[in-house]
Image (cartoon, rainbow, N blue to C red):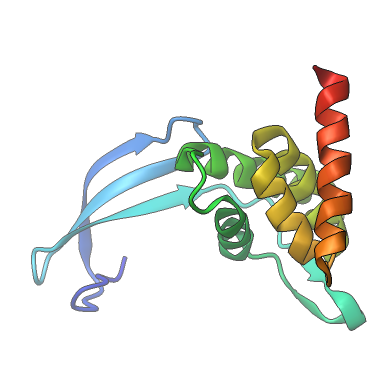
Length: 155
């Protein structure tokens, strides 16, 4: 593993343990050249999946992009990073175990919306505003009212 500090190619694993949700292995490493310590995560990747974007553009599924968009929607909300990581891992698992080599970005967006709806209504509305391309304040009002109605029905 390449050292992020000095770019030396050799590092030594000092400690390995599973993450809380057991979906990855956390490894503490030490560079044999500069002595710096850093952490890496090892996750299972079942298959390569291609995401079909608008305009039929295709790109490889990227867990990092998914995590970044969900984290952005959850920013400044009282949501533990572990909960976001569980959501991302769950969506990644669904995508990889679907048995398809390609998946539409809209389907991934719906998975994120379903997950955020259960975690936090504000993060859900934030994500929806980008995903559904809200253009006016009225769009927010209408969507927020449907979220509120659904919450009232569940209560």
